[in-house]
Image 1: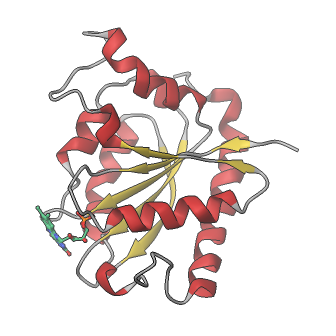
Image 2: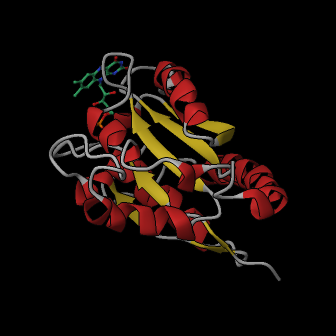
Length: 185
Ligand SMILES: Cc1cc2nc3c(=O)[nH]c(=O)nc-3n(C[C@H](O)[C@H](O)[C@H](O)COP(=O)(O)O)c2cc1C
């Protein structure tokens, strides 16, 4: 059976971010899937303080790009900040070029408002396409402050499990189909 490495990327370094709960929840759901290996990657860990593309500093970009190369697909958990994506996510993504080619991804939008990060997803889409990634679907975690219990467990877990699984089925199919083309133009 093919095993897919699908990391969950937490796209903000904001202290006290609610998206951390979403990223941890999604990671725990992925861990239930016997076809999937996963881990939580916090952009915070790969931030270089400024934009440093790989052609300027191969060594600095390597920790992030090593994860990208291993990944068959990604789940990006991205909060909506003024209808856009956090700058730190963009700075980390901008470290790479061809290593992203033909890697599928899901974007999970997170917002305090009811739209569940719909606008951040729309704004991130052209960036992902420019990087050669293919967005296979979305998840929307709106009203995030009301979604989790105090212990971090999600409310209405059956409903969320169904949503995540549906997205994961498509993501894995796409990862399998695109596998031979990954990292190539
Ligand atoms: C700088 C900033 C801008 C924000 N802009 C929006 C917004 O445009 N729409 C929205 O629904 N929530 C907005 N929020 C609220 C976030 O969606 C909210 O904090 C949510 O919990 C996700 O972000 P977090 O992971 O940083 O907590 C903003 C929060 C910050 C810190």
